Amino acid sequence: MPDQIGFGRSDKPFLNYRVGTLVDFLDGLFRELKLERASLVGSSLGGWTAAAFALAHPEKVARLALVGSAGFALAPDFDPRALNALNPSTLEGARALLSSVFYNRETFASAAASEQLLARHATAGDGYTIQRFVESIARREDVLDNRLSALKAPTLILWGREDALTPLALAERFKREIAGAELVVIDKCGHVPQLEKPAESNAALLGFLGGSAPPGAALRQAPGDRPNVLWILGELRAVMERRMKECNDREEIPGEPR
Image (cartoon, rainbow, N blue to C red; front, side, top):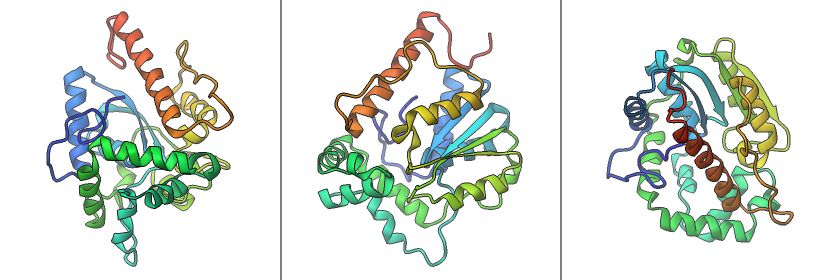
């Protein structure tokens, strides 16, 4: 699960970031790893990127899962300045963002979680990237409107019923516009089911992908009753690193034909 260009531990060149940038980066990753075909799971902006990649490179996508996906053009009466909330610079802004992302605000939008998000945001170095994406979204670039009927890969749409960032109506629109798409809705869940409801999300994704969890892949029991966001993200990263190590030990690349 690599960090996309401009985010996390990946390089952060000063580019005019848009979804097309991420599609090109993902295609380069496929070529570098010699992946001929793979299943894609994308959340939020990642879902938009995965869908756009499947449209641009249908021969490379076996299955597609969209989790709380963005991608449709903003409504004509939407004020693009509201998108600046995605790039918080104050504690109040961080808490407001977390409150819109998670259903369980007591756990995930607490003062401590907000401080952690703001501290991570200050050190991640992706503020420039996020701002360029905000501007691209406001310009309605690379939107999926009137394109989804061309998707051929089997598609799962996984959504939190209480998603405030990408409301359930958008999930229903994805289902209408993608032939044969399956919609799974998780109750009492916001924009990132994989964090807020990991067991239900994993069950839906593994069932759709036709696989089973690798040994040791389950998240450990969280310390205390209220795990924070960074603990969950750390656990998910550890799971993926264990999986990549197992694959490297077997000298095989996930998804590469044998």
